[in-house]
Image (cartoon, rainbow, N blue to C red; front, side, top):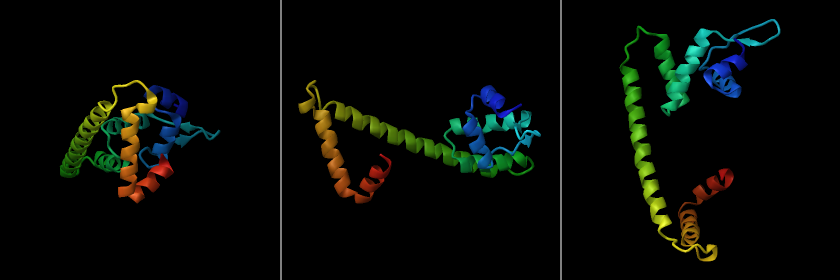
Length: 148
């Protein structure tokens, strides 16, 4: 199948498929005489595996490691378990961070019970928090300015 067909069948954007190829997560497909990529069932299966790992919030490096074990089924899977344990820890950390974020947003929401923008407690609190966080971490200000 051509890349468009694989894209449609897997629900994966064409650029994402090409990215996974460049990153070595998908093997380079055969090419037609017209230089079109031709994918087989093995590509579709591997793409599904990669997409599932991404849905579990795994990094590309972790997926590469899992694929190495998948490609070497005779290997001991102790490292796979260690990788999964690390991922569970990562998820637990994110849940903790998201709960703290929720608490912060709820607290912020309580700052404004008035619907007038000029006196909005939420906006005033955001400005105050932004000023204090930029003073306490000048590097963060630069990074936020570059990406925000």
